[in-house]
Image (tube, rainbow, N blue to C red):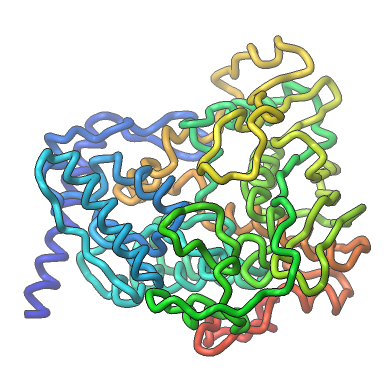
Length: 489
């Protein structure tokens, strides 16, 4: 029986690959980095068989919380290339919600009842399902890297929410594992894709082609979470529907309180873990992963990092506060090309490129991904502006730099699974953007200038700072028990 199932799965994969590659080839699939040419937005349903899920990319969802419901599930399910067939979460209530949501999407699409979404409480069991081709990793930040490493080793293509990892050492391990596996990976840096924010692509292309002269300084404006839960955590009974011990993962086991984890009222409001350093670094990675990535894209430093980083100012909550991530801050990074990147919550939310002949500012404007994003729509209404409006009207010539075009982030991932081409935001790009964030977070802690080697990925002659490139990890949730982290960092 196992042999027969294996043969059926192999045949299905071959059919999917050959059928779609043939159709895509016929309509000039050419979404290669730097070509400026894009994929077709949709492969014809006559090729895929719109009502034939076996001919599509079968996707499993790992983590059925806020970002999955409000962004990644609908973002993936809208394309006929995908068939979301499974959902997993450590909270059984969220598993149920996820199944109902996905079933509802396909019921609406087909016009008849649907009850086909499989459910799991252990993502390893989901990964063992040979019918699943790819996964959405939508867990809290502290589970990103480990879940993705296991998925890569299982041969599953991965779309993973940012930030790439909890530590720089962990990000390096993840990037190496993904490249070794050969799977298709997309980090959730959706500001690179044309929908819904084409202005980021335009801004970076103008900067890369010298429309503001020689790039000198980049200002990265980030939101911060409002202060709250400043008192020590009060222990609460662990809900029966939540596997809290496993939810803590590699981080130290701490007493349960709802505002440490996520709401238990069935809503998808902003969870408390986003504001606990145990599970992340705060908004320096939460939104920093997006905006530092755009800074990297605009100055062409997507596969390297700064050589110096420092923190000018930062506020921290009380030492015994439950929500203990950073408050208002200002950091500075210097790159080998001479460009300084200044980041602060005091700047408008977005990225401002300043050159010798002018400046360009780009942001999301009034658009937000989830209803609970900590941004002010009134304060951040501008999406694209320049020192001279003529800069924005400039046309990029055929012999100039044309950045990779991706129509939509989830679609780009699905199409690259089929074509075998790189995605617009592969893992190394995600790791490098996350690294700038985490370097800034380390500088916030040490409050002195740090000297970074972006090739070796170590601080120069700084034992204290190098010790912060990794964290101790709780058994059995170590990032990779086969690695000696000392050799990685």
